[in-house]
Length: 351
Ligand SMILES: [Zn+2]
Ligand SMILES: [Zn+2]
Image 1 (cartoon, protein in one colour):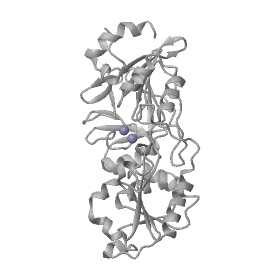
Image 2: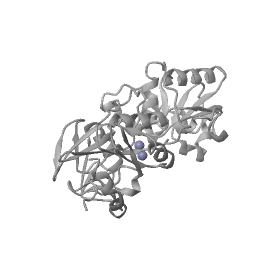
Image 3: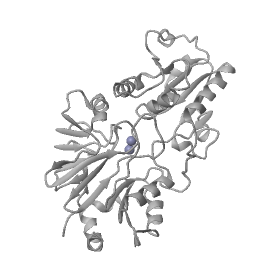
Image 4: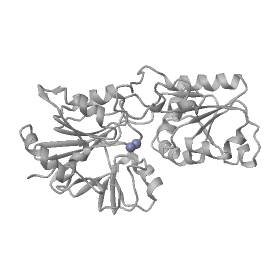
């Protein structure tokens, strides 16, 4: 019985023919890292491979001393018996899908991805394959983003409205990726600097180093900041911070403020997520339901393995056809060698 070209193991996705892991959960010998988010990039591996735009972010997260090799999108390289290439995932700066070819068999592992325009990273690239391992963070039909929003203008308007009413604006977004996307979206609109939380400073520097145009920023705890002295004389400013600061008493220093959260989870939540925020901006760095399905269609894959929130998407795919053939859809759990044995005979007829 032939094992899956990319198997699910206790350390994560593993390609035995090339002897490498993709986003391993523990230390391994060779790790291909799709992007620098903490649930994908983990410490301790001997050697890391990633897109070249991701090197700075990876070092910032894992330490400057890691052994890391940057590979441009589209460049084919060999690991063991397989040919590998990285392709833009449009998720954050340097995010990559991993294409693996053995003989005529092609698999693609998507990592996190999105199709919406994002001025802070390269656009998603559709990659043809036989077997597609897709994320599905927002894999239910209720997640469908409006595609025609100008997020920079919307956020700027919210900021200015709050300022006009005597409020500061406190916008929450994750420190890596979302924060820089917001700064890139704001760049054409912002006429004054945006205050950024300390956790956002280093990733923002990495983006600038890669030539991404971002709105001007000031560090909240920097020497110019009144926050360092413990008194607030701010009025009409925009502060960008990770949602985790909600639990700190840091907020007391901000004077009067209104809050908003920028996230796909804001979908269907016009007054802020469960009342936690004054406002919600539906800005997601993951594909929505329509884009998950569009992407699967564009790959031409006959077999799809779904990671995260798989239920609804798998049920939906089982009723669809790709090139006249029904799509086989499974949870990524089925990529574990024991479970995969059950499905392999069916799939050989398709490859
Ligand atoms: Zn991610
Ligand atoms: Zn992720």
